[in-house]
Image 1: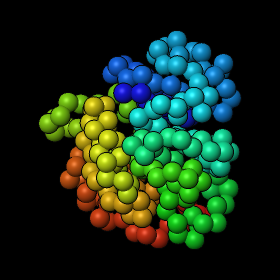
Image 2: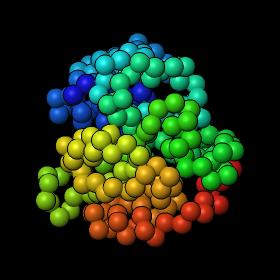
Image 3: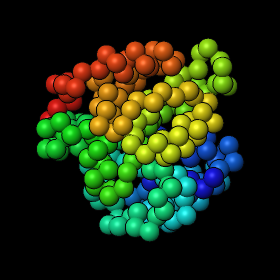
Length: 219
């Protein structure tokens, strides 16, 4: 599968490592330019790219940049990209530590809905509460009782299934966390955020989430 990754930080870098090891054709981009990705490319075999090149021809695109950087992605980045492409949003809103105040999110708009609006493209929310090192260290085969489950939310059922299949290939179970309007259930400060548990534990944590944003995650 051809996969584009926009963002080469902890999550983006480790997804690049795992997905190339699984045989996928991965192009990776960051804000500083392809020339800064030489070491990651040499380590993994991924192709350093601009954001536009990473998106072009991809079947899955992972957007894994700070929320405050999403509006700075190239205008029209997804213009001409087919409807069948799954776009994964791994982002989180950290107003105090990093992103500053984003009014729409403060007023209750789910974080990934805001990201979707900036991109002009439907997104699937996944990996936002996953520890980056777990992507390398904690994959397990199907059926292993210790396998970690990840929540996945989105409105496009086909795209969501593509993402769930890819996560399964990476060595993790998934739980359908509903549409994007329900994606607040996996935002920072919720019971499922950072949870290392199986399917039953994730289902329980999603059900226990409150729509009230915790004070520590407000501007």
